[in-house]
Amino acid sequence: MARMTDFLARVGDVFGTIWTAAVTPVDAPSSVLVLSMCGLALAVVLFRPTWRLTRHVITIAHEAAHGFAALLTGRKLEGIRLHSDTSGVTVSRGRARGFGMVITAFAGYVGPGVIGLGAAWLLREGYAVGLLWLIVLLLALLLVQIRNLFGLWSVLASGAVLVFVSWWLPPEAQMGTAYAVTWFLLFGAVRPVFELQMQRARGRAPSSDADQLAGLTGVPGLLWVGVFLLVTGGSVVLGGGWILAAAA
Image (cartoon, rainbow, N blue to C red; front, side, top):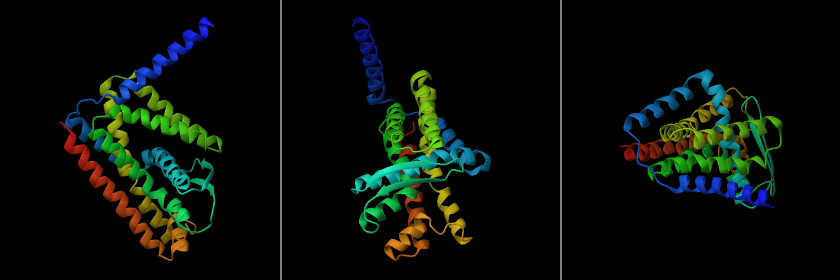
């Protein structure tokens, strides 16, 4: 009994430490760090070898956005699969047409940018460490919906990296990671939209989100691609502005 009490006390201490770190605002970083992380994230997105590896993070955000939209509109989320080729699929059950299905299909490509925008707002308010722990929490919630081994590994690996940074690394490294992740989400949301249109132009994506939306709404798929680009590009401009304005 004493051992159990001691164990629970230790667990409580850990969660208390995490909570304190997460809700305590930190001073704005230097503009040098902010711009360095911006350049690093942009290079990772533009350089094909690094993009091939890190694109899995964007896929996680993409499919998570589909899943959240499905739940938000009253659909039943049945599972998410993430694949080694950076593709993914989210399965939900409900009406085959209508508002819920439209929102669910729309959410994927804009999801990473919107998440990045929310992350930028948290950074502007000084919650860099809180952002890292919030992402860990969201990954933990996502984990219960994963339905394949690679997806399980992807989410666990992403969460483990953030836990390591948030718990063991010094504040400067935590700050840098938070800004790098945010910039990456903002920039990384835009490139898949261009890739989508390239695939559509070659006839390789007949069942893409844009084409599903075209079938659901009657609005041409190319216009939906334009909306995806408008939202993700707007997230970069607005989120980037917030980050740069808050830098010391």
